[in-house]
Length: 484
Image (cartoon, rainbow, N blue to C red; front, top):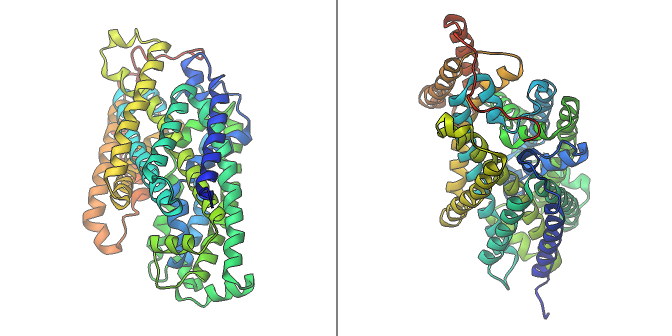
């Protein structure tokens, strides 16, 4: 063969992505608001595609498919977890009418609680999103290394990364949304095809495959709630409900035309996400029935690639590129917005903050994209996937207990002084440490983000009651008009 078919398929996908990105950058808007959240003219379908493209990263494909053997609880948790997460966001979105003209989640925190809670929210989100971007780049490189032999995996990874950095830099949210739509269509179509071809590889009927899985120890009905570890199962489900209350998803509320649209887009995302997770689960089921039982992790992917045709290798690699790029570009965009709009202006004296214009926000956002990319790429390529994943999980365990409770209370109408939110954040952080020291040895799980979040909220209510509010929270020079 004169050419490498998987490489050709990948090149075609990248060229198509470039074409979509070039089209998107032509109408990216003339104001910083349009650059950050658009002009609130996105259709519900477009927003649903963007939400799901952000949610499904490379780990969903590379890890979930190979972890099907972990049992019924793992499968049900992933399938119903996406619905729980987005239905929670749908409920929140309906109550965000007072914040619909904001640009970022940290801004909402700042409007209610003041400068320091806003900074804490932005910094934690920035660190977490940077690590997630690094994780996508690392997964991209690993997947390309398995699927393509005739070209350097590092070169293709850097090319794809350069591409997403470029269109996020010049096209803003419009480029991110349009490329996410293309990438979502690509990976959702490919994952359905992959399920079909994995089914063919099993050389058995669907009923026989289900029967085989049902005979395995981890797929008994008792494993749905982990037998004698029901509390761990409940904690994990509760954590899933609140893990997505973060800027990468809340940003879509500010892009919506109204709270009813915000409610609908997350509701539809939950339903569509459920269907996609069913497809991922079917791929995992058929792989579980086909691949030898003594293989695990990346060994399973090496076996799959070794026993599939070149064009199937190409579509697997394309699917991986689509899910990683769509997650990374959304995270990269929100990082640039938080740096240029929430972090940098708030570290300046008030007299300078008032002089920052839309043009300055633009320029800072452009520089921020480059800085985040420069940080994420070495982190991805110099560290193992295991280390990057552990860092992401570590940040997530801190983020939810510290930030989510104040945000949810603000959305539900709670208003208090800055010290109330700070007290709750400190309590949330301390509860994470307490959980690790005293609860983890008892339950054997780190999924305590929901109870720690509740502690944060309760402390805020107590402090609000015992420490009367002296004046309204106001962020000097932070007013943002709708035409910015």
